[in-house]
Image (cartoon, rainbow, N blue to C red; front, side, top):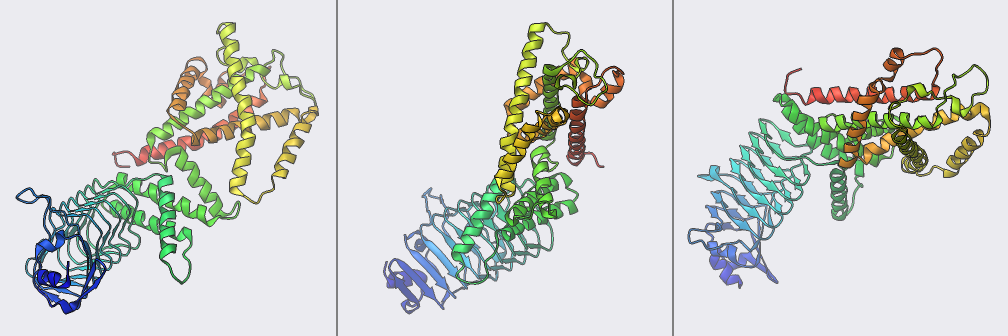
Length: 518
């Protein structure tokens, strides 16, 4: 296409057109008419400081004659002013569509400006625009990134039933009137940090739910893109990007809470906590500092109940705790003794457990022995695995930690086993530590198979030894002055502490997800 041909389609003087390869730049001109055939040309067009005095209509696809009018022009509008009706209803933009720092003044019929059912195949950029009248993007499909940052919507804006397939950016937008995202589908994380909603925000049926790993990857991606575009100036740390995304979900949470939509608000609060955990992780806080404790607390509740939003998950984890305690208790059969423990300084390793405490004692000997061997093998395996899990956790929490201290500590524990004074204490300590580490590891690696096995073991506990569910109650119900079992008692203390934490999380999750008012 030549400059003259383009000037004829725009009805302007060709002196306002610059040509660079296949790119045309139109600048500083008032455009009163545009031939719709222009948008079907495979060219790149940039409008700089132009004023569109009349209606601007993009061809729809398909049209009345069922001809697929796909807009293949790559369009850029920079510092332009749209004074008339802008209609892109049912249009398909195959390439990038940029509209930066433009004013949509909205004279005449501009209040009906629509991008309804529009398909944006390329990137969409509406940064720093001002929409004075109502604007609609109902049913639009954004295949690539969509950027509306720093824009101002002076009237109602509708993104009903929109699909954002990639990252979308609404940070520092100002919504003066109604902002409707009803049934919008955000398939990737969206940035609404520092956005201001002065009137009503409608997020009913909006899909914006992501897991922890998705959140982390997007934060790192945005940080990388920021660094690539930053030519100079102060570097923005990674935790600040996490805080920006946290602000987005905080806005939605507060808006829904204000409308008494507590259940949906809790889901945005969950994603807010995802961002907070990522923020603390990126900060690399000092060990045992407040931020360090908060980080691991968030991690614990994320794995147990998804921050009190997943009732099925926390219930499954309670069942897992019961099953694991049953397996550990069953494994203690291997050390049972029929003799009561006597008072004395030296306790034998085989005298710290009691046979009267174990479940399934009335089963045939073959089954009894088989279950005992399996449980014993699982406990021994968990004890050895705990060492490697602890080593991995230490390397993650404190990368500068010298692992030689860990090996020295383990060696001292092994040497202490040769002294009868320390055998009982060390074995009980290893048993309790293995129980805690195994449970935490299973929380992280939990899957459907593990959940199914947990339910089977829990059913066995309920049938044959229900007192294991509340071991201290069971002790009062079946106490005997001639029997003592310090190892099981120590394990029961650890079990009860974990169970209290899990039951607290269970009731809180059930209460937050209830449709019945508190």
